[in-house]
Length: 191
Image 1: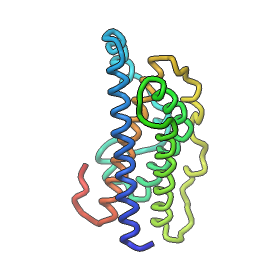
Image 2: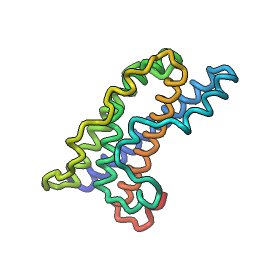
Image 3: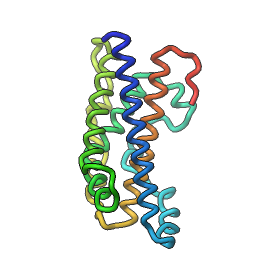
């Protein structure tokens, strides 16, 4: 793969995940705006105590660890995070389309699939013909159907789903930005 093609792929991946992150932020803001004041107060206490499905995916836990991670590791983690939303995005689209207007119900699922494909190509480019030795790629995703079991009418679970989606898209955006910077050999890849 040519360097210019690789750069274009990275730029497209960053733009796509930025859009998903912005979409997630808009969805959660619109969701909160649709709530009554008492419902808002209750939900503000929930998320910091909640856990997300993707918390089981091994990932850097802070800025320092992210900075020290290799480009390939950041791409693989990004891939797993995006992959972890393949099934839940169907529920997310349903939850969102019931309460908000964000486009077609498949918009999120399609954007995630495009991003996953782009990250896969970037990973293959990093491997440059070397065998993929990452054991985590073959592991099943944790609780693949975890979010699918949530009731769409459950206010708390809908909020949690939106908050986890926003959190994970922020992680992927950060990891792709650092990986892209690392690819350019820029010594100043600060977060």
